[in-house]
Amino acid sequence: MSHNVFTKTLWDARRSLIGWSVGTTLVALMYASFFPSLSGGAMDDALKSLPEALKEGFHLDDLGSAAGYLGANTFGIVVPLLVLFFGASTGARAIAGDEESGQLDLLLAHPVSRTGLVLQRFGALAAGSTGIAVLVFGGLVAIRSTAQLTAVSVTNLAAQCLNLALLGIVFGALALCAGGIVGRRGLVFATTAAVGIVSYAANSFGPQLGFALAQKASPFYYYLGGSPLKNGFQWGDAGILAAASVVLVGIGLWAFDRRDINT
Image (cartoon, rainbow, N blue to C red; front, side, top):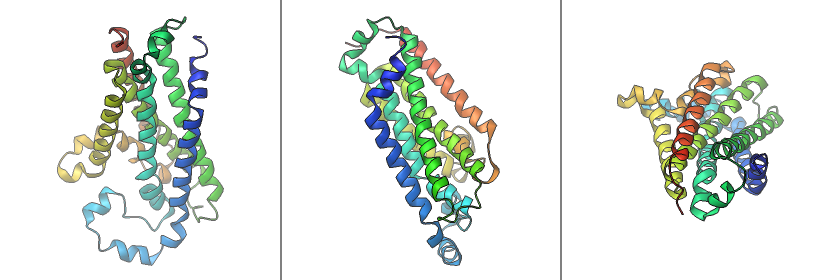
């Protein structure tokens, strides 16, 4: 059993994972395909009427370029929020879901330790988030020419999709951490989703409101701040997201190992 937690978790969640992957990819392709009709002078004229704070917060100051458009629309709002919710929901199920349903005691009755359970569930979560990002990457590469996005290299698309995967992983790790502490799925999901939305707002508008430090604490800052679509792989930012995930899983495991399971 201990060797099968990872694969069984992926298998049990296969329909959900396919839905998240296909749905997120279709949303990404829909937004990306609008670029030819929205680029050019007409879009620039329309943006002139928007407040500077709004353009800066949502990265709308460079919609005329392929990288600027993808960064503001495809990778700027809906797609990362979908990945955030995937991480939050999957992480909430990892411990708290089974604990609430009463299945966790039965699972731990098999020869699997709490540490092994948490790490393999986190591994499945990371694999799922990576799978979503890979499918998004493949879809965008497929329409790159027809959507007039060739100014963004395949390497730079891969760099942004790597950060997309890590964004889902870090919020999944946060949910897993919270589940290790409280063991209540609904509370864990709601808290993680709320933290995600607040962190998105902090990254977008923190500096304008005088909270520059709050921006630096947001995972979204490291997800998009280095402009991977223009500058390629941002290994420092990716490393911070990965390290934050490891720390959160470690905290959740420490708490889970030291408390009684709710029955």
